[in-house]
Image (cartoon, rainbow, N blue to C red; front, side, top):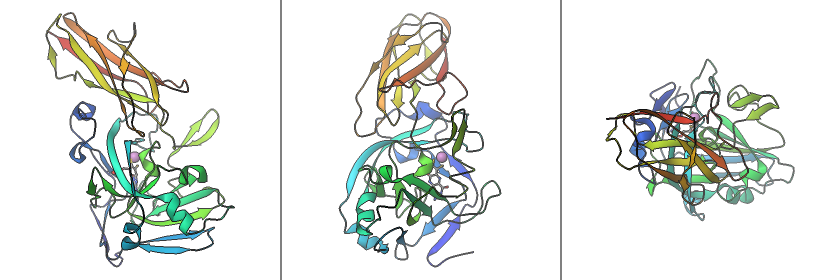
Length: 327
Ligand SMILES: Nc1nc2c(c(=O)[nH]1)N[C@H]1C(S)=C(S)[C@@H](COP(=O)(O)O)O[C@H]1N2
Ligand SMILES: [Mo]
């Protein structure tokens, strides 16, 4: 199938990311070459002259915006970590697909205002324009946001990442960005926005990306506290009894207030220094260490400002560890 001005390339699920994993993430802003890339059904190439966005559903004034209309609206920048929740088929496996970037675009709230969103609307559904199948499901990539998040100032119809227009692979010409929430919510190749009074029944909001917990079903929305050790990496050979720095990143929808580091596989813990955050960026943590010769298992565990802590196992945000050999 093809549609005017659009075609699918590289059909099917794909993931790309740096081979060194999180150890590649050594700068504050993640360059696109080091930023993971995910798609369920494939990549969609869109001719920007043919692109438009429909805003419909519970609105007083349904609108159709072309790229020029969007470019004529006010834009803002927002720095945010960007994290994939991992496979919806294995939601308790930590994948640590993460980066920190600067998005630029038109606030979603402005577009909803322009469409005169009704006070009956409690959710906003957003859909990608691509087609194909994932896990034997053949339906559009549709996600939903509760109205309070949809109207939050940080949620953007993004046109740029790190100062450059979005590439085709990144979801251009226009994608949704939902800072603080898992990447699955940030719909690429955005084509329609529908205001509704209930959650979407899409496979991507029901069967996939809905966690079954002891308290019932919980959508994969806000990002739980998480941290990773960037350095040292397992391939580093450190000299014994020389001071070195253990450092990494910590992030979550809520600010991180502390990071604990263990150099003995969880036997004992020390508080690391934690840096500030900007918008919803990640935060740097570090601890100095003079290792003895031998093998060491380093682990980091963070806690956010509302007291939620990273779990030790069986969760997408489970603690990260690194095995180090000291000569
Ligand atoms: N239209 C569309 N949007 C999508 C997806 C998709 O398959 N189709 N994948 C989601 C997932 S699971 C993630 S993690 C992010 C990845 O964004 P990135 O490839 O720019 O890093 O896009 C999200 N938006
Ligand atoms: Mo994802």
